[in-house]
Image 1: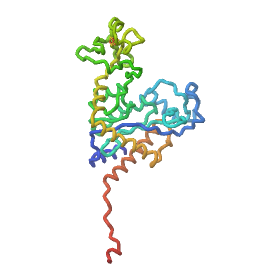
Image 2 (image 1 turned 45 degrees about the horizontal axis):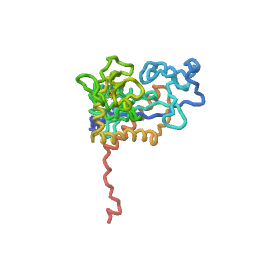
Image 3 (image 1 turned 90 degrees about the horizontal axis):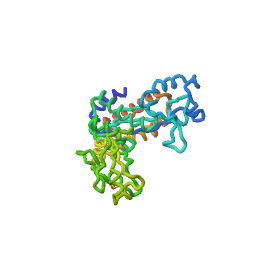
Image 4 (image 1 turned 90 degrees about the vertical axis):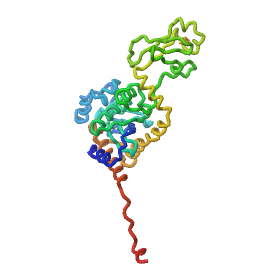
Length: 335
Ligand code: SF4
């Protein structure tokens, strides 16, 4: 039903297919926090009456949107709905939630895809790939650009968008290389692509040792001799004998995102991103979907998809509605 409504929106010309926006919103689950157990003590055998939700949880253990999203044992588990995530991301008091992910076309705010995931960032960001691939497969539409908040600015996500999908990322880069202690940040070093090395502010080379690290980055090291005799050492690496810089394998994609961030088009797209936030606000305040009625990943996906269908139908009706013909009142006619 959801796909039929999107197809209607496309046929009516309400999908621009140029710019998409993506975001996630947390929706509380039907799980009682008082009956939760510490994650380290929970086992799927301890609550046999919650069969469907537990079976749904077990069936999705290897799914990157669910069990495989993180190996960290959650602080608390709701035995009635073990796939729900204990989170304090929204409120003062923590609660059990699922993440509702929307991919929208920014022209008229049509929801192109919807995906329920665990309420953790890795799963939400991972939904980018799922929803963009599915939209391309189902409707033959791939956006030219995608806007999202900084949470989506990981090197892997930007690399996938730019290198594999040729989609321009209007997303701020997550960059942990900036230093705030007054010493040089990585941006003070110039990358020489031809020689594959960085050049430091003192003019020395930092070649790579060629070993790929666990974080998908290469290390570039200055020579100890250069650093020990360098007049800039106190501004560069005061606590170590030599300076080290890391460079992601997706650094070229990160550079594309950095360049887009400086353009006027990026200002426009950031304003358009608000449309997805407005859809979530409408979902919670008007459709009153601030708490799920169904349990398990399947239940969450069903409710989120139904709600997205209703929102698209409402948008379609508003975009196609004609004003009713003016009715001339009897008194005016008789006059
Ligand atoms: S300390 Fe080393 S890396 Fe830093 S500026 Fe001096 S020579 Fe270059």
